[in-house]
Length: 357
Image 1 (cartoon, one colour):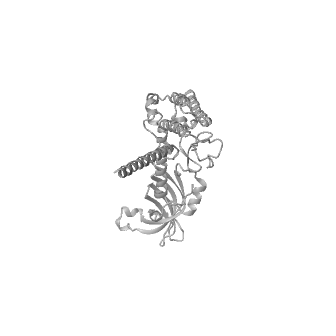
Image 2: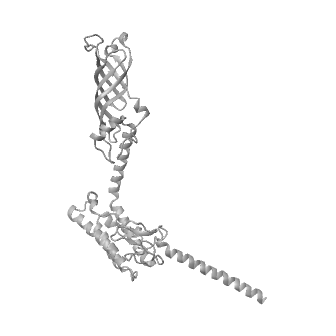
Image 3: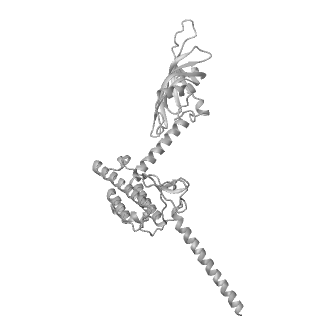
């Protein structure tokens, strides 16, 4: 009986010890989470958590009192209860970053009456953005110099082997990360309208280039060379005009008087060469175009014809041509021909891949 009791006590003791070791291991792992590049480290109930910081400053955010908001952040960070022994330079560097943002915000307030949207180029909005440095350490590279969350045991790893990146305690790393995340989220709110403008511009650019490359007037290689030399464009928008030069296409011709006299209504295939012309793209996304070009039309039964071709819209083209007579005097025939151009190239190709930015 005593032996069973002793064995039972040993079993209970082992279970308790195992439990203590597991709790200790879990606690130690959680304590180090702040150094891992993830968001599992944050406690949403911590007053430094960005949502709580935003809630406390919401009235000032609504009033766009951004300099006051960041002054509050700086004052709160300066009064941090964290012991910064051994890493005082990191704490001072973070306070300097907040002061730099305050100075930029105050300057925009003073010079431009707080119109931030049009003057965000004077504000370092990515100063507190979180990233990764060296061997996978959480870092804030927008600060000068950067702040890297180096943990104990990483003294030989890059960049923690540099004197400006001292080893931080869990409390120190947590304090920096909470406060930097809050500052960054506030700057995201500040620049949200500008980001929307930028995203709209990117979407517009994307649609314009897609239309130009897939639905634009297809060019032959020599036309691409000519347009590349004469036109200017960039990533924001393709060219809004385009030159046509020696552009051949299939054509169908009908005598103009054939539209009033069915007896004379005879369609004939031809080769249309647009000697020189110009196109203008239109619409918000440049999804349509129009233009005019001078043409020479070749037929097997008549001498060449000269005239013009109009494009009122994408996929539409028609013009008039006057052919030389077949007699020795080579005078122009009295009746012109209506010429309809069929640009076969548009059905089998696009400009995609033929223009380089």
